[in-house]
Length: 617
Image (tube, rainbow, N blue to C red; front, side, top):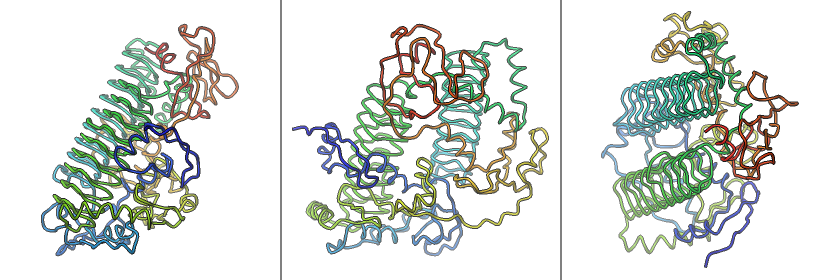
């Protein structure tokens, strides 16, 4: 019998959330209780277990090794950290750290102790595929890269996250199949795209948004298969290149001015309620080639799943509350950074390579039937890293689950963790501001601590800044080779909430790229540049809204920027967009409603799929 829809109160934020009949069916199928926290709190809890960018110097703890390496883990964390090569070797065995299960103590307390003694690698990479890319993390098959994270099959690139199958790209996030791109977000198969957002199969595009199949376009939005367009207006080839050379001439001040002008122009045109193509019965944002997937964000090739994010590999199906990775996986629940040929994994992180039937485990591979294990390779039927027979394992696991419900773990805020909950944030090796949670759900130190999360104050930096950002050459043509020796102060001076490093250097790869592309030197550190790009990304949340098409024109947007021409008129503090063609609803307001990641108080004009396609396709 299918359970009816139920509204519950989140144990963490105390807001109501709904469990649908389809959700109850999934939970029953994989034999887990329904969640006690809302989807957003569950996502934040998982993300607190992932650090992509914050590096520290730390001494290797492997026997006979004294080297200092960069690590995800600060030196004060009581962990055993090995260099990647030694961790992946056969020189040590996770079974050596086995613990007998203690029914007098909460399971998660025992698991926390196990995490403190089992070795973990200094970085999360497929290290045998990393070539001359020492500062890359969560990466595989990268070559000649610098500070590239969450990356696969990338060459000669720097400063980016979510980069796949790309080369010669600088300062880009969430791109795939791209080359010679700069300062971009959500790009697919683009070539020489500069300052572009959510563009696909575009070439020689500058400050464009939502364009597909376009080339030689500047400051445009929502164009399809157009060439030589300047702020959405056709332009003769010679005139186009003349205008572009005035806007993009190697000057930093002109680069910022042009980007601001393009962003103001974008606000005057309607956007579709979601970004994505080739989707069937799916909701979310940045979703591609999905089917029966709800509340998906930055995902592709996913089926029959819900509350999923950051999945960009084929073969993901029948998963709930699953974040990061993919690649032929099924029946995963409450997992973070888990992937590649795995099935039936719950409440785990970094479980990969042919694993199945695993619960509450961390950094295990090629294994099955594990409960509460860490650092195991090619092992089966283990609990807290202790080896059992199949019969012993199958008898003990139900007893442990019962014990977890009778003696749950209680965190520092009094929140209860029975069987069915992902790891508590306070067990994570990372403070909130070191983790991916800060990037997607930013908090101040005060609010993070108030929510029961830890916060790490940045180490004191004693950089001897030799050049302030305002003293940099404004134009790239004036940058000499000695710029590579300068320690440049970040324009934010550590006063932002962007994990600012306060200073940075220009690297040779970057200087050559900027000269070749006639682009200016940056005035912000890589971390602040990353956060500036993320302003183009919507939050991983959904709002129910009505289409803003009011008939012949749109409703007025919430606010507007500077007027710069186009088919719009500015009314008060917002814009209206005048439609170019009659829509299916005639002169009456569009009746369509939808789920969208654009909140009602945002300045964008948001149309349903039908009204949007009438204008741009």
